[in-house]
Length: 83
Image (cartoon, rainbow, N blue to C red):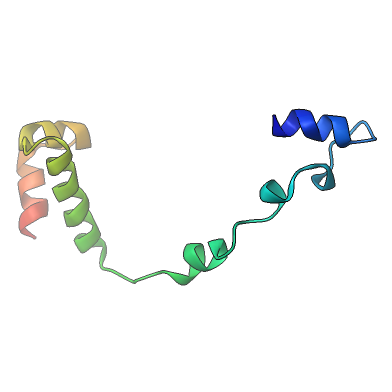
């Protein structure tokens, strides 16, 4: 619908940004701050451990299924959680 209305509004053969609604041309208020401003440096090993734990939770607690989803052996999954 957005493109269709831009085609109608545009007077040339090329759709310019000016023909698009403001909600498409401009990011929502605070979007840049959320994208750039909220960064907490963390160790990669901690992020990896959290990701593995969340995958296990996603798999209903089934570690074998989580390992398969991650494409790693079950023993490696266990080591990642212990490190």
